[in-house]
Amino acid sequence: MRPSYRPAAVALVLAAALSASGCTPDASGKPPASTPSATALFASDEEALAAAEEAYRAYLAKSDQITAESGTAPGRIDSLVSPDLKPDIHLSFSKFEQGNLHTEGNSTFDSVTIQSVTDNTDGTAVVDVYLCLDFTGVRVFTGSGEDVTPRDRTNRLPMSIRFLASESGLRLEGSETWSGENFCS
Image 1 (cartoon, helix red, strand yellow):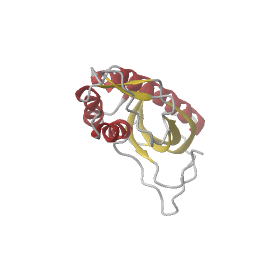
Image 2 (cartoon, helix red, strand yellow):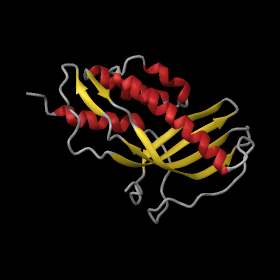
Image 3 (spheres, helix red, strand yellow):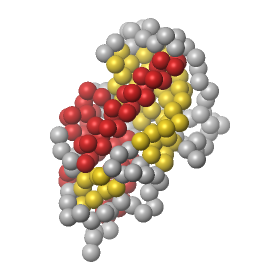
Image 4 (cartoon, one colour):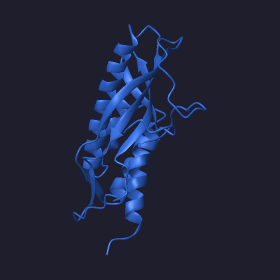
């Protein structure tokens, strides 16, 4: 008989792997409209959006690879996340290794929209986006092959994602489940 803590731990680990910090919704509970702005790094919001999609795609691919390998060698994701986020990300991956868990399948995302692009005086920019994160294709297994994916897991989550952009690219700076109206129907 499998221990009863595993489904809860799996759900916690999946959420922790993607949630560290992020944006606060406004009082209406709806995502604010895009704030168009040109930055030193991006000619348009569309260019910032394309860069954010590429950066998040790389992050998810590396995250899926690490969890598929039971959370080993989490440092492989370091170039994709901000230094402040690394400890939380590494901790979430260590729970896979400690729990002798691994994933199969790939996370995806869609419905990406720009929340804002803000340039900083140091030549960097903050890019905030909303997206729908989809775990439908990801299953969690024990080392013995038992599927411990929580049956009541929410497979599509509305997310608020923050990137720090510089001349060297975008790094994930924060990620949290959107607390307003679910825009991932």
